[in-house]
Length: 113
Length: 111
Image 1 (cartoon, rainbow over the protein chains, first blue to last red):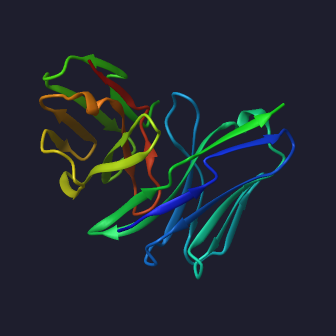
Image 2 (image 1 turned 135 degrees about the horizontal axis):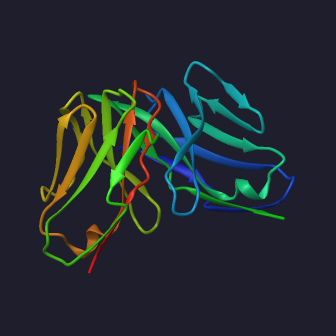
Image 3 (image 1 turned 45 degrees about the vertical axis):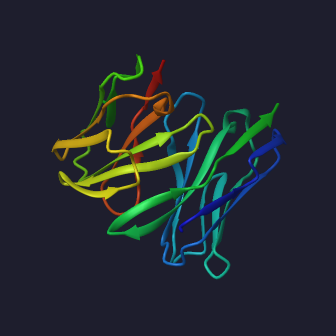
């Protein structure tokens, strides 16, 4: 069945360093890949997304890359700050009647000051 | 002005009880969802409605019954609550087939 694998499950970086989170999806028909940030006790918030007709997208310190052939997509955060500490979820949108998200298992990012 | 809101924020109840969670969005979106986030933080879709019509129904026990009185509201009623139903339930809405915007969540604890 449809599946999204996400790695690593936890990631600690020093403030100012970069962080990379990787996801792999199984359904080649997936066409939309959002990333969500969830702070403790809060809702998941959309931080960046990419559609399947684009290979890379950047928004300030955050970028996402997509390799459709390999069915991989990655989140890159540069110049990390303590407020980047949160759980990050990737998702792949698949069509089942309508479109639905399959979420990855989450990455807990800790930025050490 | 909250875009997607849920009530209640916390719900503590005994096993066997029936409870409801309410969701409202003021964004004019056509599609709404219910997700369950368990203690390991896994986020899994439960239901989706488009303009009051059920379009996704994952393998959820039939003790869970969603209801959409209009396209701005999607409620979740749970009968005969079990310990395993303890989780955070998130409502979300979407204007299209892409972005989804989540509500603040309802933390359900079944004792």
